[in-house]
Image 1 (cartoon, rainbow, N blue to C red):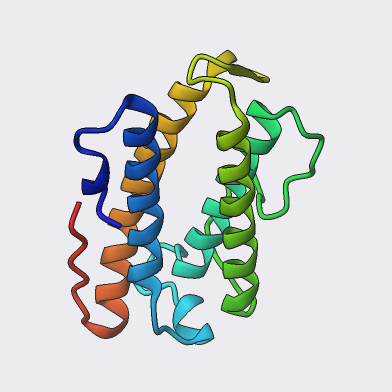
Image 2 (spheres, rainbow, N blue to C red):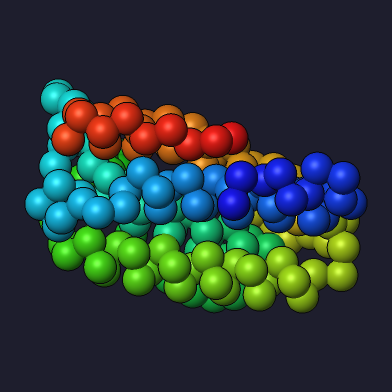
Length: 164
């Protein structure tokens, strides 16, 4: 999905489409890599890995949609804050399973929200609307997808062109 399906849609459909396009972009950049490649910190001295980015995005989905917006009392699973280095040493399947599961739950949370004006509560930022969360998630993915593209190119030379 490239976000083009919602060019003339309402605001909610547009934001959801753009977020889905960013999710798809991360999946496309990581496609076909082995566990070892997903754990490869390929741009020294950084310890950033693609597996770490996928795990981080699972955590970000979980935090914003479930903890902040829906008010679910679910523990963080991937964070090692402070100082999270985005390293990864597990099977890629574990990161993908967590990420896909959190994306699916986020879709349910968004679909059940009465409007983009509905809000959740962030412990430091206070009230945040679903509109703001969707925009923040698009920004979060866009930033990390740029990192992912650089990592992928360093791993196998493959330049992934993501139509944004």
